[in-house]
Amino acid sequence: MSMFLDNPDKVGVIGLGIIGSRSAEVLRNAGYHVYVWNRSPKPEPNFLSSPGEVAQLAEVIQIFVTNGDALLEVIDQMKDRLTKKHLIINSSTIDPDSAKKAAAAVEATEAAFLDAPFTGSKLAAEKGALVYYAGGDPKVLERARAVLETTAKEILYVGEVGDSAVIKIATNMISAATVEILSEAYALTVAAGIDPERLVEALEHNGCGSALTAMKLPTMIAGDYEPHFSLKNMFKDAQFALNLANRHRLDLPALSTTASVMFKTIQKGLGESDYSVLAKNFPATAADAPDKNS
Image (cartoon, rainbow, N blue to C red; front, top):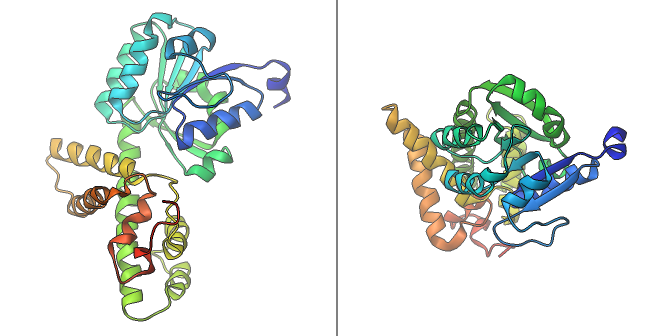
């Protein structure tokens, strides 16, 4: 890392949500000069007035925005400043069609584009331990590698632009359905009069237990729904998956049911909470107590 401190590189970060803001901080701590922009102003160092100004000062720009429309809007705002020296890294979870449109818009300016959505929570971002699913030209990935490795523990090359979006959406399908069935199992355990800590212990020694269940069940029991990944964003990704399934004439009953539950939970005003807030749908659990973070 001393190389960065002696010769700081310039990196732009656009989108300062849960992950983007923490990734910007990790990059700063690694010695990069980081220039940032967000739709709503944030008290961040080197906060600039527009995506175009970010492109004027940084040739490598990583984008963390909510959806494909937001990504295309950002690219449109900076396209007049992009050159063949620029590298745009999309780390937003978006639908594959939007990823391909974004790549085409960037490449029309002769800049390079890499699709690199990630997996990892707020804590992973703070530790620089995200996992990126990279899609695009392998040569572009090599150009992006130094910046990505600063915030990642692993970079997985999965294929073309759009392929990475599908893989990210597919993994989130599993996470969403897992948290819903975990909520149901928690509710059933409590309804039967059993201490939910016994379920925590059982999952530690059961094949269905995972890093996700180990992380989410204790916070459900504590009624702690501080957002590590918000319910509204998980629902968005479920919609992407269901739209893709419709295109490929696939029926996804487990995800369809989970998405319906997520939508009803968002209607209760819980969209900004962590998606484990699905547990609050069961009055038999302690999860019906007021959200500690609301």
